[in-house]
Image 1 (cartoon, rainbow over the protein chains, first blue to last red):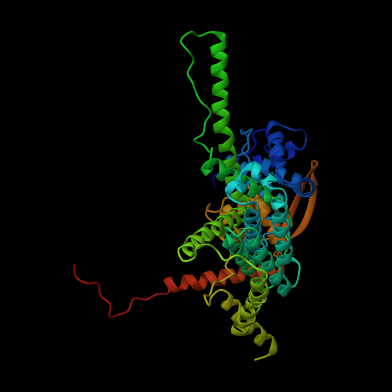
Image 2 (cartoon, rainbow over the protein chains, first blue to last red):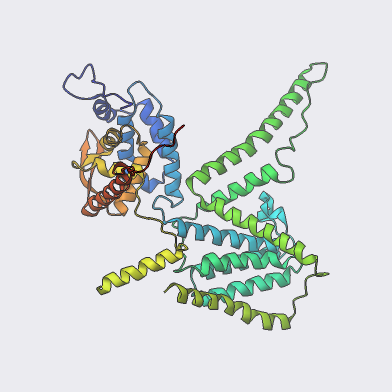
Length: 337
Length: 136
């Protein structure tokens, strides 16, 4: 055992040290207890009401007498455990469901990116930006329709809605049709073609992880990332109060420029430990854009430009596109029975 | 073969097909889970006692953090392997004891049998009589 049982010198009645701490802790709040209670705030209030006192008692028992801080392992386990409960990952729905939820989100957001256009969607302001008017709204509506289709409506209608959405997006944003079609393929694959309906997440807080990750990636690789630190200048020759203040101001600017992005990266990393879904959906989101650009480049070698989508195209292509996944699904069912 | 067994076989075939015909055992239990369940074999225990017992049984390999233990207990309770047996208030503090359920015991025994079978492949291995190390 790493933690030997210590007899309490004053007890002398066969009571072990952890037991003595358990009993003593009930009589008043010590430093350790106060800190443990603070860590327990990682859990939602309802969970704390049900389990908090019990976890606290175990924590106090398992911490050696001289310590006034819980161990790093205990602290990390409490924070990550609490965040997992908040993200709805404590009762793990299984890798299949988790990955499907993540894939549906990644594909839906790729739809939005197609409508909004370009990588600025990754930026903090880009998510909220409405420029040109109507385009982001259209993207969000299509994304919502696609996710709703994948989750709630019967499979064939979902296939139809998703393919219609993708085709319309291709029509709206004709410069990159594959950027709309590929996310549609992901949605069909993960949201529709797998057996059973996709269960809704128990908590939507995990979307915070996606925003954190997007911000971390933007801060690392995007334009104006870590390299774009505000100008840093040493104090001038004459050390006047003004120059010192200027230096302090610049130093604070540099510190903030480093601390804030790295804090976001750290928060994104912690969230990845809590819940892998944002990371998976981000991979799908980025992969669909990357694959779309490769397909576009390959296609541009053969075509002068992508064929303009006309009603004739729509009328002939839509039924075929809508029926194909259903046929594939039926064939697959035949194969596995 | 009865109907239940047939259905089971079909289900297993479909399950295997979904995983591209690769057999992946989902019954495999992770070591901390195994030792949490094993620590309850002698009777119900409270949180700290489970941590201590699991460390003892595993030769100190499984050292559960408190948060990890309660995550595991939540999961095992939801799975029906563990149940709340006793709740006491001692000096104003809640102390809950957990015990194994029937299905928890069965799952633990199944895992022990699986590991014993896997171990027997190595421990029961006899070198072939004809095999001799090649001269250096």
